[in-house]
Image (tube, rainbow, N blue to C red; front, top):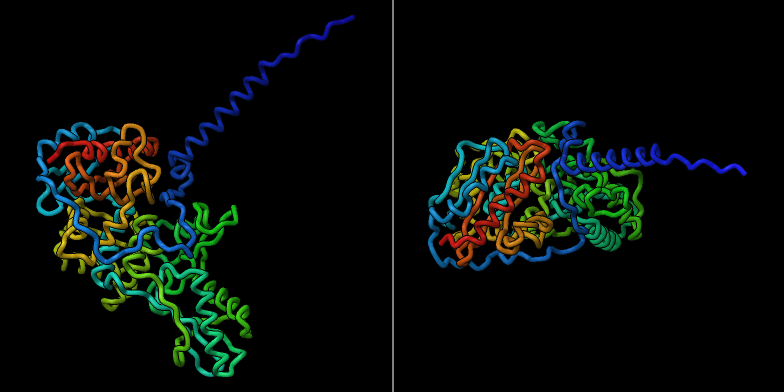
Length: 461
């Protein structure tokens, strides 16, 4: 009897190890953003959206209690708390920082000039929107009728949902029945905003890669579409390329469900006739909270257009000019500020720590209760929004004591918000780094968390 020779397993083992290493390396490259840099996608991180039919977790009240001020910040204590942390190699060669009391001059400033801000830009846009439009203002989507033609008129509600559209269709159907009309042709009007719907200062990849949708005054569910998982409101949402057209199609379907015959397909047109139905959206304060909590790009850009429309030019450029004028009128130091959009998606944007400090101090001031949603909308470290999964490891002691807006693009990381020290004294903190090596992405983010957590455990007052 011949013994079977043992099988040689080492080639298989080596092949298995090789495959595992390749997969692990690929996963690491993806997580660290290297793949985006290699492929030219360079997508900003965007947290998942909740279903748009849900109300915000915290409703804006128009006024929040002023933070307690138990002492004055001590510059030397602040410097000791941050010693070495802002020089972390992972943050790269260009780091700007500012620590200030809720009013008054900074007690610590690092670096000079401006930096690429990413999504902390939304702090400026939302502040200007609250000041210019009013915290309790609501955007209205309407339907007008002229004979057998009705027109869906976009009012620029950034959070208009499918449920809202269904309600509007029901009101429209009721009005048509009362008028004895059962068959209509549908037009839509998204002419509130002017100029290009895609910011020319955005990377050309953003639209095809569904980072952001074209900006329209008539958008349902923020022009998000269900991703591969079939769910709307998750990280893999797609984007509509023609938001107004798709909104009109959805409205036509809702009308048919409500018993109205809609002839043909919706056509773009101007508003005609008398208003027969309308639906109001959330208040600007609630929209601001949503925008800051989730770092919502589409909502920020629509707010920018509204600020521009209030000043007479509802384009991207007009919105930027109006935001800058509004902030200057509020006393914010806008010198050295360069903006091309309202969300911070443009890599050409430049902000200074002073501008961010200025809007946060205004929002904390008892003289500007209309701006309080800027503070109530800030994510809380370890608990909510874009900071829900941050402040881990050595930074866990900052959880609940740091409220800050995040800013993230490949090579860029920033935090701007409020930190409460060990003695209960709040301070405004801004840290921006815009020359981060892609391989250091996660380490840089952790370094920012560590810096703000150090201030939270500091007896800085």
